[in-house]
Image (tube, rainbow, N blue to C red):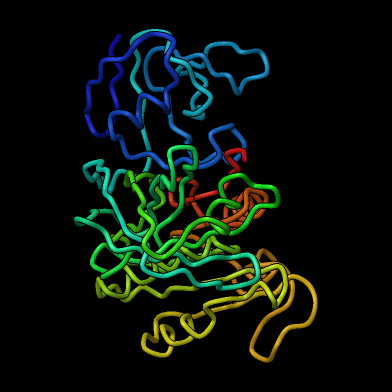
Amino acid sequence: MELVVQPLNLHLQAEIGKNLLDVLRSNNVPISYSCMSGRCGTCRCKVIKGDVLDGGQETGRPQTAKTGEVLACQATLTGDCSIEVPDVDEVVTHPARIVKGTVTSLEHATHDILRIKARLSKPLEFSPGQYASIQFSPEHIRPYSMAGLPGDEEIEFQVRRVADGRVTNHIFNELKVGSTLRISGPLGTAYLRRKHGGPMLCVGGGTGLAPVLSIIRGALEEGMHNPIHLYFGVRSQEDLYDADRLKALAAGHPNLTVHIVVATGSASSGLRKGLVTDAIQDDHKSLEGWRAYLCGAPAMVEALHMLVSNLGLASEHVHADAFYPSGF
């Protein structure tokens, strides 16, 4: 069967019965996605000709051009069709590579977050905000976001320990300076859109700071003068890290405003208390014309997605990276 993707005018060959998002990803079609389960609404696209089977519909009936939008992660190809994907102003593709790295430092950023830095055997091209699959051993593989930029001397990842987590227990207990990593990527579509000239909302919860930090650094080093509003949400003050790093960035770039929001317990002077959703709602009455980058725990990302939509931000301008667990 033929899948036509507009406005890119791509004509793709695919098998009937394949998941639409899988086909788009395997052909490097730029479409944002996050939860892969139909909850976040990020991978929305429009059927303009032909049918797909929409698993998100209660009846399971085919979704046709008459009924409009589907979520790509929930759609199954049933025959020749044409779809329209949003936000193709910047098509960014990097060749998928497997690069070896050597761990150069391990730093406990908080009681349960480990900062890993590694030196790569050869450069890895990626866009700020993307992630990679990291193989720590043949049995220990997980995706983690890059916290830096391709030009950095070392690549940085930030890993939160998961209670009884098989992979994170290996990372925290077995990984050492000098250990070898295999890094496969880049992956993900929640990357920096460089052509956007309006305000940017960047929200990171916990280790969701890593891709957000990459996006902000990428924008600043690119010379983008957009107003950038960073909201970094943590559970408590003991979960806070990189505050000095963020403040230094803001001090050197007047277009960057940093808000650190502590959900529970006491908060030092200069920090805000409560939820990042409440802080954003207090600060902004409309987000029309903005771009949003939302990274962190699924519940937070889903609540943020609903909030920014209510504040007038078009869904195609929301780029989300929800850290759904991939098992132990």
